[in-house]
Each structure stands twice: as C-alpha cells, then as structure tokens.
Image (cartoon, rainbow, N blue to C red; front, side):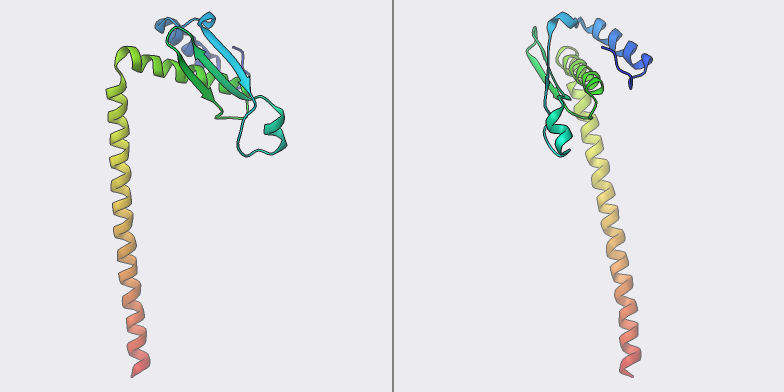
Length: 137
C-alpha cells in the first residue's frame, strides 16, 4: 500500500497494528468501485471508493471519505482494524462509553445555547417594550 498523502509513520503504525491483530493482505479481498454522491463528472469517471472484505471474519468495509484512492485504502484498513479489535478485544463497551459521553456533551451544549438564545430574546423584548412606552406618551 503506497500513498503519497499518507506519512510513513502512519503507514508503519497501521502495518504493525495489522500484524498484531493477525491481519494479512492475502486474507483481504479488495475492490475499487465508482463512488456515489456529489462530485459531478469526476466521481462518475474514477474508481476512488474502496471495498474491503476480510475473508476469515467476513467483515466488509466500504470507504469513500476522500477523493483519493490511496487515502481511502488507508482509511478502510484502519476501520477494519478497529472493527476486528472491537470483535476480539471487547472494545465495544469502551467505544459506546465514548459515544455516550460525546452525546451528553452535545446535549449540554445545546441546553446552554438554548438558555442564551432565550435570554437574548427576553432582553430584546424588554428593549422593544421600552420603545413602545416612549412612543405612547
């Protein structure tokens, strides 16, 4: 897997991670598909979407994060490693905890932004009320 956009450190890290999980390139079925979505003619002419299937586990991954084929190959392999780790090491609980924590943070943010918006509305309402009192007199 050679990519001009991927640093050698990242490639080496992914390679050692795949080796630690026992993933071999021979166990992977890799296909290149024409992508879908916005992008016009370019997306219809080039095959930048990557499909990977790990034969022993049956895990399938389809990746079209970027327009670059090499970057998509890298991201697909990284996602495959993540899924196999979840499957083997039970990292699912940790992943769910992180997602739950993120969701709670977003809820807090939205609650705070709603409070700020309501405060601003109340303030503007008071300003308008003051204008009306001055006109009526």
